Length: 252
Image 1 (cartoon, rainbow, N blue to C red):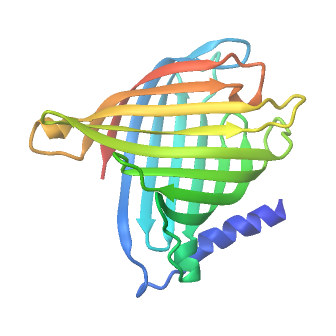
Image 2 (tube, rainbow, N blue to C red):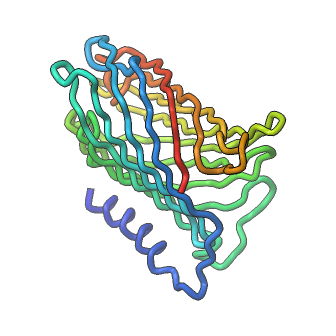
């Protein structure tokens, strides 16, 4: 675990100490979201009614990018469910920036060192991920990223280490004067057999920029989120989650 902590810390420090004179900020935003669904899946095939409050921060610079989020999961019935907090911090450092050589070719925009720290949640995670990422230049996509990690798992279920592949995407589009965003992520964790099953979580969002219908675009989005989660938390004791959530998101 110490090796993975060092790799993640090195990734974060490389990003943090980028000299101001050489750092160029491409993009940065924060969001607050509210989601609600009565279809979240828990142990024993029980569906749970809950509201999720999410804070996100996304930044892209010439040295790489970073993503941070934290969820507050609030159950409607505290007699049968449990409230919790879950978060992730995921910095990536551009190898083009790090080496001074342009690694862009074809549809590949850049290759990056990728790290993630996962904490809290229903599995009480304290996980460290280290690997390699690729940013892609695809038609119609605002961004499309793929990452592959080796995962140092430290959870309440005492999961062994495994591998994870992650895809993130964002595709804006317009219908008349209305502006929409289709974005999300997909995770696949390999599992290692036994009690820890291979895990698939696909989590897209489709939202309308409400302000695009008036004179204040880019502030409030509303729509739906869909969660397909097979072997949630790597457990076969949870039925596959198919949860549709109502979603409101504010950008600032």
